[in-house]
Image 1: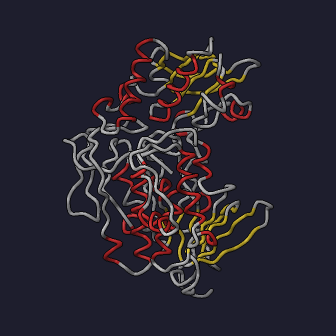
Image 2: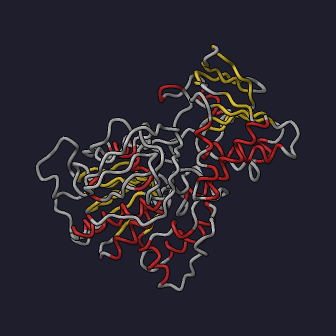
Image 3: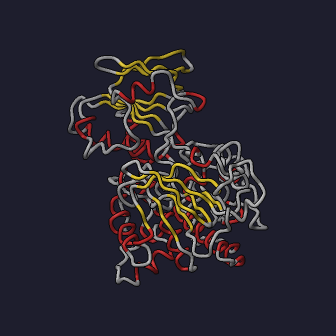
Length: 465
């Protein structure tokens, strides 16, 4: 064992928007980042839903420290009010950022982190733990294992690779894996009207989920059905009705998001989309030419024959690489314990979480932080701009600037519209944060200045990266 050296890097897991923002803030603070990305390039998960356009304009999608690095290269920022697609976010922002002189030698792609621990210490050892560097084990594309020592670690790896199962009670339904292996269950947010058009044209598709991701897929399928005869659309939700999925409609300050709900409601009312409410999936049977989806409903058991199922049921964090660290997680949502009650989707549904930073994200493992989408665990209401503020605060704390670390804030326009991928209730007040003496407003109160909902890993949804 040895103490972390001053020139030892801060490892950042994941080269998405929040991971690269973390690297930018660390660089500004005189700390050395090492960004480890499992994909072939930066923003790899975003590439998977690159065809989808975000709700929020460019002005809310660019981190301040990242922008300063880019501007030093002569980079021209996109028009602030334009709405980028996921691909545009990668090509016009993340890739240029990773190529800056400050970051390009500190970003390693095709490098998967498989474990984070303390050098020479397992989870049970306490003596000297805080003074011992982290050991981050990786696998390269050729299967070569490598260990990296780090003074601190940010896990900003997101949740895109671990979607929630389709079955009840948080479990995979019997037959779910077989149906996925047979190609009957697609990846989240397929490119229905583009790359994957032939997969859906003239077929019967069941979309499962009640959030903005589901809404986007349904609208794309409806567009495809206009010129692809035989295309049928079903929509399964666990709730008794789908009204919450329509969101704020014309009351939503984000016009693109409000329009989504209005268009979806019209398609349901016209019969273009067949809704199956209170539909709890209990199993799948894969046949030669179709898939049977078994479910319980208020009227009894049901078997729905479809060609394809699109999952839009959200994501959960992969904590398997962190088993040798001392974490303190909320038992309900797998977020840091002090953050969990502020974001629990059963009680919060409009993204009115107060800005939060290093103090709320800290774990018993000193200098280890989960940030970005993964910090919200299973909650779907993560804000991209919130992630930027998270890593700014953590970088300040690591640099010893306690005042800056505690000065957490976001200055974004009010929305005043309740919305969540899980259709949570709006009848509970949000608890106050440990970083503010003022209590948060209840989720459905009079509109106040709130953080803005941006796009999720599944596209135009209430969460991102």
